[in-house]
Image 1 (cartoon, helix red, strand yellow):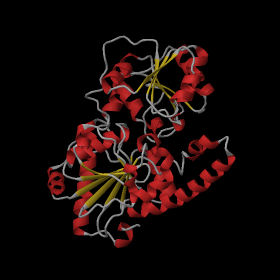
Image 2: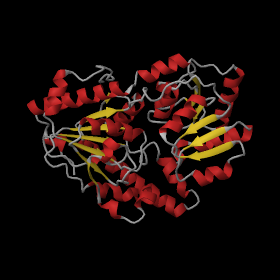
Image 3: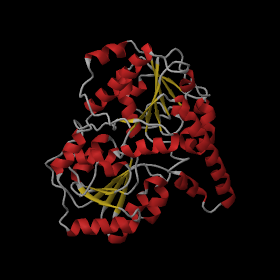
Length: 399
């Protein structure tokens, strides 16, 4: 098994020299906002500003300046009317749309993938590094939540399950186009091995510890939940736990679940929608604690909260459990509203224990410059080794 990549803290001179000779193509599933995956992509766009960036769809202006300044190439899905509202419903078409990507004369391809980006066709002999957020969530560990949409429509649910079976087979087969996997956590590393039979190195996503800093402002009484409002995030458990107990909760985020969540929420819950990073930081600095009930691949939101000195009360499963424990808040094992409520009550009864300095140190171990150095050194290593020893055709090509 390959070890987690932790060093060095800055790209070596050899790496910078090797990188200068690379023709890089970047591939990302879609560009519709700035979430954790886009923050990883942003680092690579800043490092390779002349690279082409391939994606299924691009909402102009929805990403940061380094991403928006790239040569962005979209798929035929870009021209579908209403695509930015309904693109998740077009999941069965995404593998077909991804065939339109052409990386040209790239000497290294880097995909950042949780859906179809890793399926990009790569010419023989060209290394393909996949920074894998997770094997296709809809077909594997997130399948039940995706199919739940049709729980009251048995025929559609049956069709959805058949479609997901086919997607799982396709996803496994498309992994053959990848010559080098990078996982975002040990949790995802284990999934890559289980789903694709492939090993990987681990490079955790970046935390902007220069921006997310503690504040001298006294913490308030409101709990905080920051998330895309989609089923697998389990925001409903935080909403119900605080509604039933009367605890104040601020929910930051948007998504198709918002109207349903608002209907089940009590008067103690406020929905603030999407907020800019400055407002988000202010809530991290002032909240009583961050509630994080979902089972995540890594969990960048809890790390941003820890960087701001906030306690984190999280489901102790998945990637979050690799960085959050009872030293910096409270974890719980039962993935239910009752499990979260019990954790809240025990944490409050114990005097709300957490060590903000320890939380800050854990976030600083994932600081943005460290991520940049680790990624660029790895890309330089793969590129230089490939130049001396071309990748075998059997590993490099998958249609």
